[in-house]
Image (cartoon, rainbow, N blue to C red):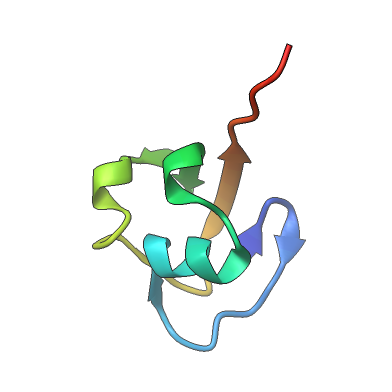
Length: 64
């Protein structure tokens, strides 16, 4: 799988929510794109990621 430009290997298919948790993201503070399409936050628990996917995760950061 390609994640934010880095090649990583997934041992098994995981949900977006599981992937985010393993990588230390807070799901309510990110946007996820898989293979060029945005995944709705409401679908993080049911959308599966596999080793052939390209994923971009963008974190929202507050500040001035």
